[in-house]
Length: 211
Image (tube, rainbow, N blue to C red; front, side, top):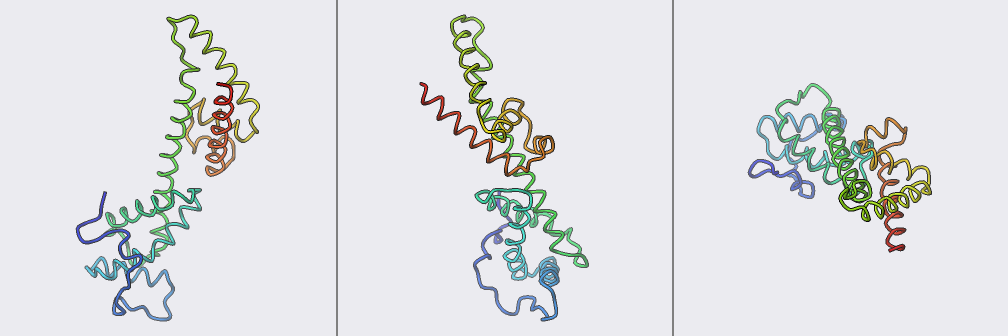
């Protein structure tokens, strides 16, 4: 996905912008300055648009962190947010706070990213354990072996620290989303993801060592 020809979400972040771009009054707050740039961008000022996009990156990253997005996924949220801003820039009301408008968009994109990541994590757990949970019913020996493996798996899960065990049971075995699990357990999504990854690593190391 890309922005319109000639405009990119990232390009201006490290570019210098001529001093005559929507020159801000010293008395303006940063929010008011960004609002003025966006208003100028809506009127067709490309340089003001580049400046407001570059100035928005730190705000987007902060909003994503507040939602629990991991450091290594922040750039994805920044890009998706800037793409959305480009798509809906005509809806911005210059009489209102630009920062609030941008933060609302960034928060939605951050939640989308967390949900997407939660679904991938759930599938990862499900795929790891699928053979244990769905043995070949036409092969008695395979069924017995699979049941033994399932028992060892349940025992291994039971020995995990409480947070890791909870993450595996809710996200993996019950296939709940990160949002649902966060509401159910009272843990934030960042902690759930960390616990899930640590649990999977511990289980894999344990079973690889037994093989």
